Image (cartoon, rainbow, N blue to C red; front, side, top):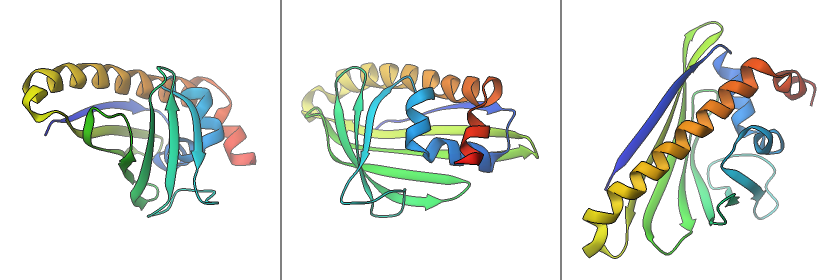
Length: 157
């Protein structure tokens, strides 16, 4: 089962980045991968056991369940429903303070594909595509956090 990761350093405190990453209204403004996100079952914020439905700009949809929420350092989720070709899928965001106003953000995915017979060929291709998307998402977070007033909006909401 492949594990892939991407990381970036951002000149913003880790608590602010964690909050921005978990604010779904603002996230749709900086995350180039996501088109829609909706909490399920009346939930309004991330918590262990909460499910979220997401639609990517490429049209794929997935429902995930939070398995770890440890503000302001970590959030992790696993797929409960998703594209047929994923047998298993999970992801995590890690926010590691490097200084008062500098953070390393690490984004990880673990996945396996089906059918298993094709996995040795398909999984390296999927890993390349997902790694590219992860890097674009991290760059979107960095650009928004460092060069726009989105953090001010977050603090005032």
